[in-house]
Image (cartoon, rainbow, N blue to C red; front, side, top):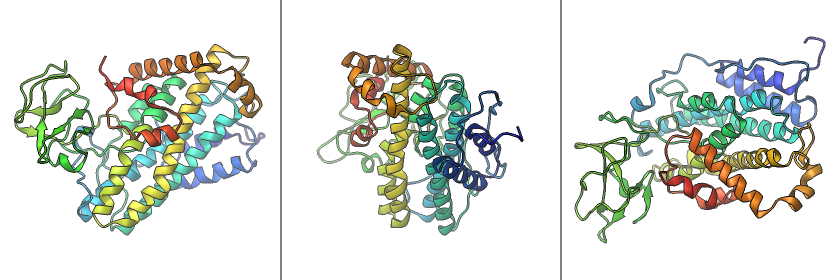
Length: 398
């Protein structure tokens, strides 16, 4: 290998095998720049088939706990809460770096993806490294550091589950995942994907809006009027918890056990499209807490770039789906998509679009446990290239 110029996949493996997250981000930026400027020209060497690690190298100075045991982050009203939330963002971005280089190393050659695929995810990887570096620096400005709070590695579980299927990886990690759900401790033990917040809920959604998995109805005086009890995994409904309620639809629940009202616990869930849904609330919380510096960082850099990351997932999911139907229009060779753009647009039909969306639904239902959780940021999702027909049907339990 020493007689060959390093290809992109080899460079990606160097990032994955780098344990220190700051060096990982720095190295990733260096490699991305070389690829984008043409100093790394080959995506991979066809004669080299290098193993991709099941788990990237990581330092051990971040205390890891199960997602259900994550301490409460708060709502950015105190310095400790702001530190905890930024720490969770830093940790998520550290995994996002690995996920971006992993998709390049694991699937680029295996699926004979066009050169533009590599370029798109190199850009995503470079963004994620910048997000990590900026957020880690902001965490230090807040008087803390990466490793000061516990974290969980649930995000990589989804990567392992989709390690054999690029369509699944794109759908789950890059169209559903990638962003942040703030995890908190719950005293009650449940066999559920999500435990939903009840207390102080009025601050999180407008009257009549959705809170994560639960539909809430508000009385005219602004108090809760509807809260349902979700006691068992088979979704059987129990009696209403608060006044003025009667069971109507199975979508109208809140997770509750006895008198233990619990805050959201996302098991194995951080999200690209979902991040688009929840980041605006996180930004508002920082502004309400008087931390405009963090809010500006999220609003001006992280949030708009996460839209482009989700767009990359949608774009390549469409490409793979259509290529499987029409390999002539969507060639398997390592070429740019530019040469087939006009033909692709002229031959893509309403039927093609419907089939792609149906494949997306089937893939997500196979690899993502449970329904998607409203509310949805329709404007951001539209900017990323997929409308309500992609995700609204997935919010319903089959």
